Length: 193
Image 1 (cartoon, rainbow, N blue to C red):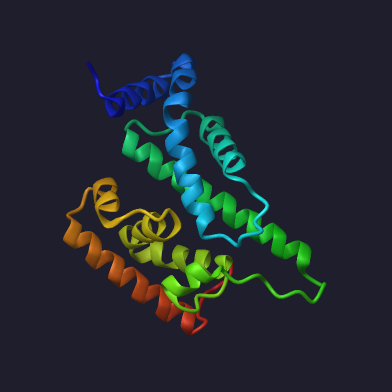
Image 2: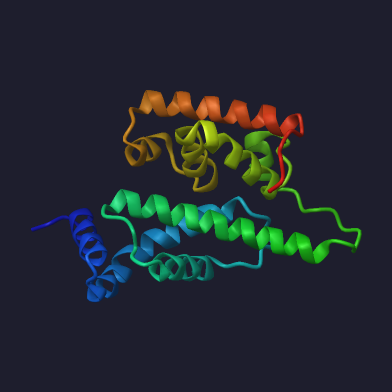
């Protein structure tokens, strides 16, 4: 009997080959994990954030299936893409909120106390996103590490499994990525998009 991971991989491959019924069968199998990712991402948001986990999951799912195909063939790859899409949705939401506030004399909202304690004074989500995009240009693996650990709140062992790295390498990458981002954000060198 195939494992849940193998079943999801099989459905992703069928969807990749144009089987529309595979997407229908895939949705309930990945929904719970996508909600867990959404909750993890939302933990790093301000308490009054207006986007809910269910909305985030549904919007991410729509973005995944509106592409020509889901575009991934393996479970791990699917959740990497899903987490990236969710992070982009949150950043777009923050940018829209900031744009609505321009001209009102209201300062951009800082990240909540938990995230500030984790990374020091990193500023707001948009600056962090811009810095992360800069990091990804030269160090894609380090940027993915930040996405998994910081935004999704995954433990070292979980991130290592997804990135297919040793736990020791994952810890080194996490240390390097945090130091790079902190230096960049502390100096205010982040280039806006």
